[in-house]
Length: 185
Image (cartoon, rainbow, N blue to C red; front, side, top):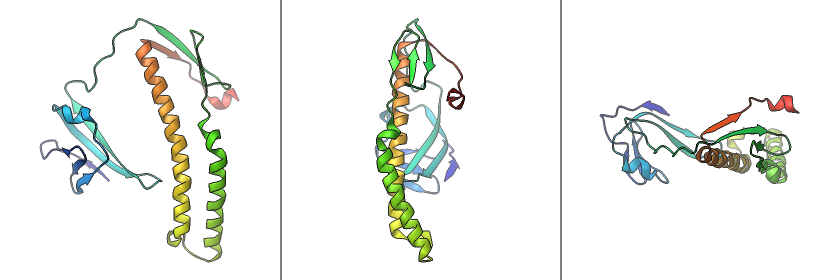
C-alpha cells in the first residue's frame, strides 16, 4: 500500500504505538522513534506499507523538514582510505583490519536443512496434486526458511551500519575504490 500524504489533513502519529494512515485508518506498531515524536516542524510525504517474506509488515515514511533531524557531527580533520579484500572485509589506510564476520556461513547448515525440508514439503504437495497455497505445512516451513535468511540479512545490515557509522564519526574524508567482487575472484 502506498499513498501520498497531505500534511494538512491530520496527524500521522496518534501516540507512541499508533500511526494513522489514510484509507487504512489507525494501525498499531511496535515503537515510534522519539526523534519523530519530539520534533514538531516536519511534514510527511509518501507513506509505504509492505509485507516481507516472514509475514511482517513495515511502514516507511518520507518526511521533510526545514531543520535537520540530526545534529551535524564535529569535524575531526582526519582522512582514511579503505581497501576491500577477499580474505577479510577491508583494510584501512592506517593499518586497521576489519574482519569479515561470515554471517551466512554461521547459519548455512541450518538453512540447508530447512531448505531440504521445504523441498520435501513442496514435492509432497506436488505429488498429491495440492496447490501450495492450500498446504499449511509448506507455508509454515517457508516462513521458517525466510526467518533464517532474514536473520542473516539483518546481521549483515547491522554490521554495515555500525561500521559505516563508526567511520563517519571518526573521519571527515573516507575514500573507497570502486570494485566488482566478481572480478576479484
